[in-house]
Every structure is written in structure tokens, then in C-alpha cells.
Image (cartoon, rainbow, N blue to C red; front, side, top):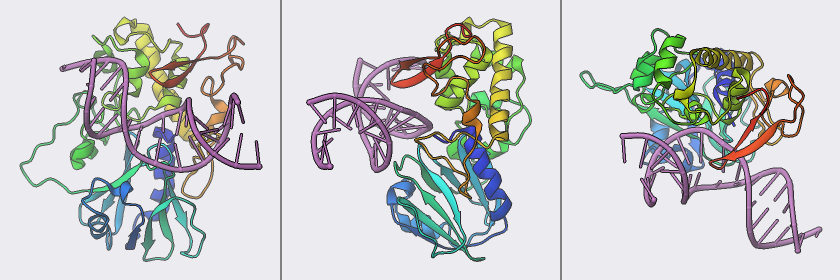
Length: 300
DNA sequence: CAAAATTCCTGACTGC
DNA sequence: TGCAGTCAGGAATTTT
């Protein structure tokens, strides 16, 4: 499942070869992926003829800035891929739902078997309209996150992006304070922390040495600082390794290359295998229908 | 108001 | 072998 590091990998690759390119035509063959629009024709009219000026990321969302000031947002969901093709005659993968044909030749394709992902064009607000930015995002200072949220009202609800937003551990502590929610639910709540999914929530908790079901308010100052550091460290390392490609999920960047952070996973998908620190078997439990992997000795 | 359950979807896997 | 049933999971929506 593409989480922050995988989406950042896609952003980085696309940023290098798409900025400055113009979209000649757009073909939508599955209307579900543009479901925020009233129809596929509306999406086509809002993308054809635009030149890509920038590609940013907030949480798990990609934000393409167009020359007319509008933004195209892409969320890959569980199984979405943005793939570059050199020519139209290159074979199209199964479940190719949108094809962007570029003026310079070549295509950008959106492929998504499960169609949990979506694309939409966001229109900038007219003067005077205020955007209600997430209160957690407002707690962060600096970085480009606030500007991105203001530019895309649909994303204003997103919480802290630990790569885009600068946030110190004191402010992070303020977010965790007075929350009885289990820590893993907090880490995966996009309105509180944007970008962590099931893989990186588990890896972060292991790195911090804290159990998934501890309530946020029960953490000591030391534990909050460890968790704050763990989120930044895990995400940064995973980005360096170009994300995680699991056996069953087929995450690849726009050039078709797999990531290799899965080789560095300490707990995720490692049920029964020895913990890297204490050699005890990694355990797996289902929490609210989701797999959670952890080491009972190293996390408490 | 918040948290839990449900829904969307297809490929991979399980068991008979 | 083949087929029905189950599982996986992000986020919006519905229910508790």
C-alpha cells in the first residue's frame, strides 16, 4: 500500500521528468477513479492543455500544479500506480484507467486494480474565502505544508506531515496529550498525522519501543521524544530506500522500479521471524480488522 | 462528540 | 482442477 515514502518516491521521479511538460489529451476509461467530478468529461476538460509547473506531496496525496493555477490531486489508495510510458504503443497494463498523452510524446498512466485511489482537479478559492486548516497542522511551524493545504481545500483537514512540516517534540506532545486513543490509531489517523499507514505505523512503534495499544496520554516525556524521533527516522530511511515493495502489492515507481525498504522492515510482515534485537518471535494480532506486527519484549 | 463498523474493489490465497 | 469463500486495506460514510 503506498504510504508517505512510496508517494514521495513517485513524486521525486515524476518531478524530474514531468515538470514543464504539457498534457495534450486525456482518456478516462474508468469513471470511478474521477468520482469527485460530475463526469469523466469534466475531469478531461480540466486537465487537457495544461502544463505541469510543480509536483508536491502532502501525506499520501500527490499535488500537480498546473499553469492556470489549478491543482490536480492524486491518491493511490491501496493499489494505484502512476506509470510513465515512452510511447502509446507500449503495452498497457491491466486496469489502466486514465492515460495522459503528453505533447513531448510519451504517456502518464494511472493503473489501479482495486480502484480505491482517485484523481481530481481542485479549483483555487476566490479571494476572501477562508480555508479551515487542520488544527494539528496549524500546530506546526514552517515548511510548505500550510501553503499546500491552503491551495487545496480538499486537503486542509490533513494533520502533520513529518517531512513537509517542521514540528518539535513539544508540539507533538501537545497533540498526544489528553487522548485516550490507542497509539496506533493516532498514528494512522490522517487528520492527526498525515502519511503513516499500516506498515510505517508498526515500524515506527517498534523503533520507538512502544506497544501499539498504549493510550497516547499515557506516554512519558521520554517516550514522546522517542516516538517523535522514530517517525522522522523511519520515514526518512524509507524514502532513502525508495519505499517498500511487498511480494503481493507490487509497488513500483513511475519507471517500474521496486523499492527496497521491505528488506529493512523490523516487524511488518515478519510474523514468527526473530526480532532483530532480542531474537524473540515477532507477533501478529488483528486490531480493528487490521494486522499489527510487534515484538512483545522490545515494545511495552 | 468520538470511536467503531461498514463500504468500496480485485487478486491472492485457503479449503473442500 | 476448479470453485466458493475469505482476507487485505485507505478513507469516506454510516452506525453506535
